[in-house]
Length: 163
Ligand SMILES: [Fe+2]
Image (cartoon, protein in one colour):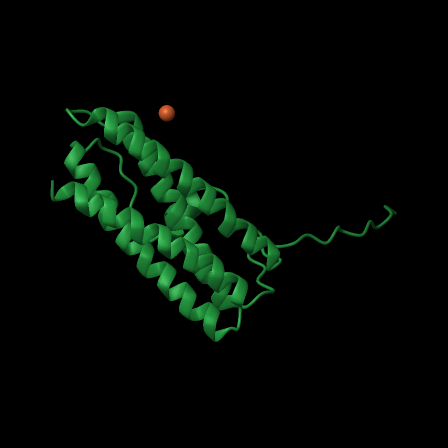
């Protein structure tokens, strides 16, 4: 008779030992941020036109900032003892933002990013509210800093469209 071996206990990817609502909102912000980072990176590569250099550099900086932000949100999830999703299949499913598979005009890129940052800001605000109700000051602080950056980037994109 084969010796029974004890199965190792594995954490489920959906394990939620922190406040579930906080985890849900952090996961949404992470998914939004990663989808936005991927889109911004694509725009950095593919932008064309007289403003190429400015937009190429601007999108490059924003891409770096977004991946840094995503890292902070994912590490907050880990601090809450929850695994962070790390695949585009999950991010696409969870995010309120849509991926871009075409190459819009330079102005179309700026307009699309502005709309996305506005959605991201709404999702962050919701997260701040939820973290406040859960007395989770660390998540509140993290998301407040993210909201500041999202609002600032939205302002810059809005200003470009008025030029
Ligand atoms: Fe680059």
